[in-house]
Length: 215
Image (cartoon, rainbow, N blue to C red; front, side):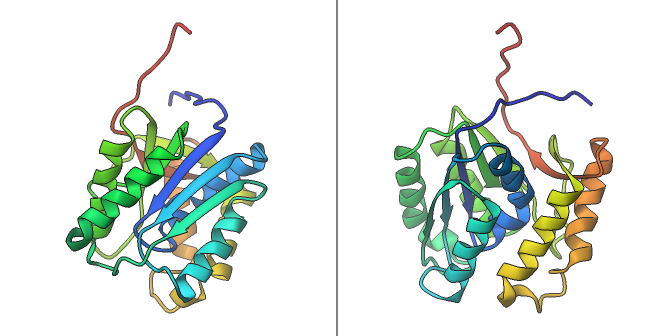
């Protein structure tokens, strides 16, 4: 296992098709970075859930997942499950996000995610953020679309436990779902931890990575 550091990012972009996507896929990574670097800027964009209970949940949750950060969150009102029909609106939102920040790290859904909203957003990100480190997070679901990740962020036991606690605390609207429980979240983190010689980890796909081995 080769460990390459990406430095300490000062600006992060995190995007999700739905409220809770970012927290489920990369909440532990956000906690790790924000705890290590107070004041880091986090520009977050969520395409659906705006104007109601889901947006309120998301704002409280991401504030907790980004302690001490300069969090700038936008939650749109695109209909859940209909992103392909609202491509232009989603594209405009991603382009506006790109214009206002120059991040060192981008957290995005996977381009091969089985959910059409996740997949569509991921494809938009590849064209808007061409010269950035883009880590594509995973979300377990009934589709069985988990793949073989290529990058890992180890999580301390405290951070892994805090991620699960915050997910349970801040998204009460999701607690009835059969997959939304402590065992699912910690179980996947444990498996990804095994794969990178850690107790827990979050895993990502990386499409392109430019190295500077002589710098």
